[in-house]
Image (cartoon, rainbow, N blue to C red):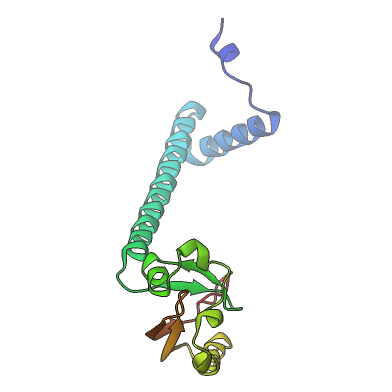
Amino acid sequence: MSIAAERPALPPSQLNALAALLAAASYFSGLPAWLAGLAVFAIIAVGVRGMQRREALARESEQRLRAVFDHALVGIGRVLADGRWIDVNPALARMLGYTPEEMQGLTWMEMTHPDDVDSSRLAFDSALHGQQESYSLEKRYQRRDGGIVDAVIVARASRGASSSF
């Protein structure tokens, strides 16, 4: 059995692309095709390794950020432009008497003390519409059990794909 018979065949389009790449490498480097092929293979291998390393670093960074978010002693949350919570850390959920999962889909307006909804909405809308980059204010939340929690809010609009705070 030959070596070629043990390997799956490449589709013609990939074979043509590989042949063109090897021919170009050989032509521009002045090296024999087999040596240019080794150089191309080395460059591709280094490129793949570099990409894998960047992906690993990005995963590690995301894990560190998630650990800070999950273990923070202060409440941290993100909301969409309509006020719905999309990401809540355990500290904020505990403070308001919910689990993080229960808060997703609820709005911060539903949890804000009725007397503080208008001023909170004004500040939120101002940042949302770009009139100010961030805001801070003192307000009260109503806990799930009906208790009141005094809070200082520091918020900044994030103008990305999800447009969140």
